[in-house]
Amino acid sequence: MTMDKIVIYDYETTNSTNWGSIIEVGAVVVDKNLKEIGKLNIRGRMPEGEVPSAKALLVNSTSIDLLTKGNYSHYDFLGALENFFIKAGPCMFIGWNNTNFDRFMTQHNFFKGNRYPYITHSAPNSEHDGIHIARAAQLLKPDTLKTGLTEKGNPSFALESLATAQGFDTTQQHTGFHDAYTSCKILRIVKSKHNENWEKFLITATKAGCETHLKKDEIFTINEIIQGKDFPYLVGNMHPDHNSHLFHKKSNDRFVYDLRNDPEPLLNLKINELRSVLSKTSPKIIRVCKINKAPVFLDKQCALKYKYPKGNPYTKLGLEVIQKRAKMVRESEKFCQNIQTIYREIEEEKEQTKTQEDLLPEDTLYEKFIPNKDTALFKTWHSSSWEDKLRMLDKFEDKRCSWFGQKIIYQEAPQILPLDLYKNIKSEIARRILSKNKEKWQTIGMAYTEIDTLRNQADNRDDEVELKKLDEINEFIMSIEKKYEFT
Image 1 (cartoon, helix red, strand yellow):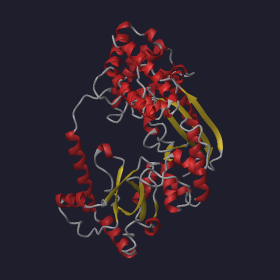
Image 2 (tube, helix red, strand yellow):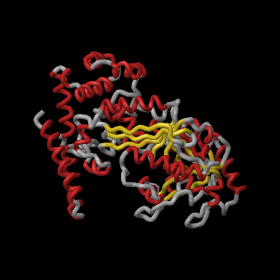
Image 3 (tube, one colour):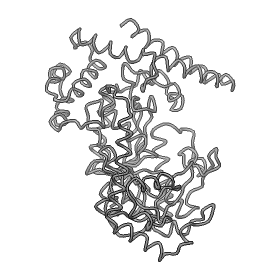
Image 4 (cartoon, helix red, strand yellow):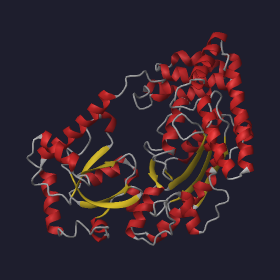
């Protein structure tokens, strides 16, 4: 399943939430042997009307000059990034913890930029996660990588920590290209020590690869992180027709059964009784595999040989008992249907307790798909003049695309907007960033509070350099406030 090309990438952003913007990307393009064949290293400016996080700027060494005077505007930066992704494909994308961060930043930045959001993991491309591969490799062979320790005393798989432990130069860490290249070097170590498993590690980069494995009649090991520590679980597959979550927002979740538990007393329980047993049993009887996040499935021997703190719960049973349990669960269609019902009901109950607030367009990526008619229009819209972009906004069926288009024009070519539309967009930005509430996005007030906290910490360390940077950021926030306060 190895692609001929792998793109190992990393982002730096203005904020660690979906509302932030990507401002730097570093990527190393490698062949299937992880030999470098290309690269990308570009920076963009922050889009107009956004308030950055001071902490994010300090971490990725972004000065206000870099943030506001880079070669690429945010719009042009996303265009260059999209072109790079298109030219690199078909390929496998890999980052470090990217399935929990970088991928979502791509999706939300592209969504807000009227670009196809799922480019890194839609066919013919696929996406894996370097941290999943490294953790799986370490479970199989604990001497694969040298590791430092977290504050809780567990092996640390943070990129910076692994780089230091391996003896790599870390002077440029938290720049996109440096972190992408570090990820590449770590994956080379893993591949060299796990040549026989490398293909198996990569096979779950697609949902189809995961599904194939989860339909098989077999016992295997999954790895979960509990309180920062890796724990292997020996699991069996559920009935192949009843192993998926029935709640629409959890359609990528698949259920497996932890074989330390005897299924026999559970198979004929009524749904309420079964739900009660599931909620009271620890560790959980049912484990959830997210097939859109590239889990790594390992051989059953991994869990069977693992030294658990309180003794191995699986080896005590013996393989014959384990196999019997796995068969019993897999063949019990009614039991597996009951599991589906229980998990769906739990999610439906959660959904009912949510506040029914009106979501802003930027917050609706996963609420509904953009119509195909609109995504087909994106390419023409981007290649048109700014005047034509404005005229074409009416052609978008989805009002979100029309709003994002207006906002892009406001940020890139405000002079061509009719005055009432210009004022409308500016006042909406002002309403958001000047809000006194705790919002999902960064407001002016939240930025000042963050700066004050960071100043106190830097003061305590007598860190004059950081204090100077914080003064610069504070001045910049004041200039944004001044621009929007009387809108």
